[in-house]
Length: 324
Image 1 (tube, rainbow, N blue to C red):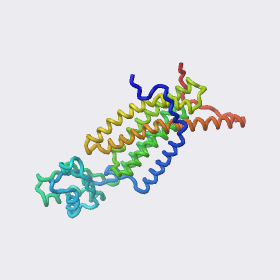
Image 2: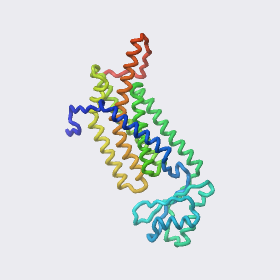
Image 3: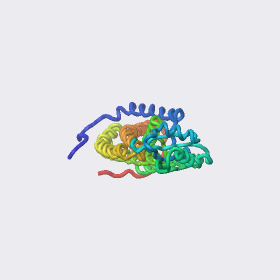
Image 4: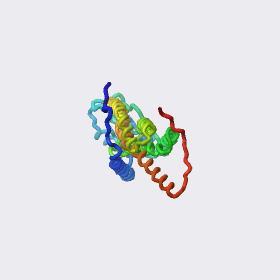
């Protein structure tokens, strides 16, 4: 049987948890700063606007198209080439109020007809989303992320106990925010498709975290004499091969989508690629580190209360399984 990680491997992840947590905190702070300084490049789904997919003759380049459309009265536009250069296809985006957005497609068609016959160019698609609708979609999209994290928090608390739930949520927030940070840096368009990718990554990363948590709990029951650091190290090392194989195969699939899937799903695949990498990192280094901190904190608090003669009522959300 092929083993990616040799049996008996004992990498000391727990001793380096301060380094990884500090690194993640710095990255998350930088992401928050970027949000206020640069922000996300919202697509028309979230910001409102008109988006027109068209093809023009090869004699026109992106500069010529932008110049002619601006002269034709299409204001505040952005032009982006998509697909293969030989196809000469472009996305024209414009922002404005409800009234002006409804006339963008007509202005583009009218401008091109002044130079070309109707058979020389083609408007393949025209979408219009009002600013109010875009703001509502943006609000509902981020609420969807919040509710997903809330349900996962409840699930992990029931599936394990309250010690494990914060680690899972911290890891998922970590993954989501870093993906958002990458999109702020690259200024790739952030729309409903990317939001769907982040929601998918929340589920993917949580599944990986649950695998690690299951092994941590199993190790604690089988070796009650182990410290939490030793139990986490053993659990992470035993699941490391599975984590690498799963993440690697997933990354190969989404990277294939990124390279060969075309412009339509390129950003979606890019979000998944970043998410798989960050999700693997957080399952191994972040979720497990939070468990160690919470367990040690609870032990110190219990020791302090015992010293003071206080008794705190214990709550068990779910009975611990009996392992033989």
